[in-house]
Amino acid sequence: MKLLAIDSSGLVASIAVVEDDKLLGEYTINHKKTHSQTLLPMLDEVVKMLELDLSEIDAIAVSGGPGSFTGLRIGSATAKGLALALDKKIVNVPTVDALAWNMWGNDGIICPLMDARRQQTYTGLYTLENGEFSIVKEQCVVKIQEIVEEINKIGKKVTFLGDGVKVFKDYIQENVEVPFVFAPASLNEQRASSVAVLGMKMFNEGKATEARDHKPNYLRLSQAERERQKKVRDFKIC
Image (tube, rainbow, N blue to C red; front, side, top):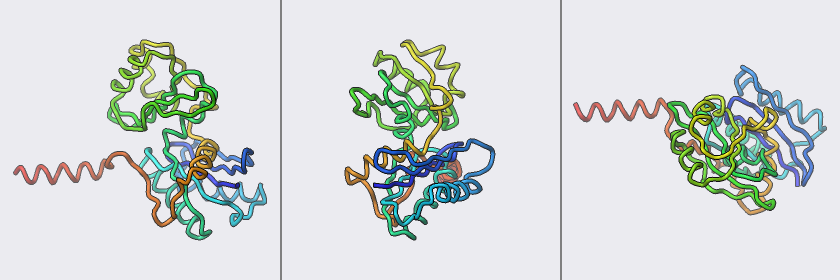
């Protein structure tokens, strides 16, 4: 089985192709350019280097949220356009789950942290015990205080990773009561290879969807939508 994966849920843009248990290629870049400028050229380069006929892929996996609203829309639109053109299904891989997958082989709790602004984080809690990937707490958006309190209650060693580490590092160091470490740079950010491997697992479990039905999972309203709702509420009060 051959699967193409896309991740543009955060600052990193990443493309990967996996065939069965082999990573054929991965292109990841963390630069100031927008994903609309990088994703398609990256995909084109990977296709050329692998001499890949896109019609040969079995499905497209995409990091489906949560994350950057703009990034998710770009990634989902790219995946959806390709899937419709190629008549392939899409695997909507939860962003935080895929980020946790980076830490395969970890012997404690895995806590991805993505900066969601306003002292909030897109996060979840995971384990990889005996080669089994388990979700302790499903991906969610909460205050950093809430996830730290839950970690302290569990009482096990934890590994933090994600772009939220930089934002919340001081708070973590001051308030986490269990042993903890931060992931190295090579594993800290989103990687399409993790989306691909987790996506292949989900595909084999029958969790792929028709391209026309795909949409990102934002977990919360965008700032513009929140402000619009606030104006509506304020108008009703007046």
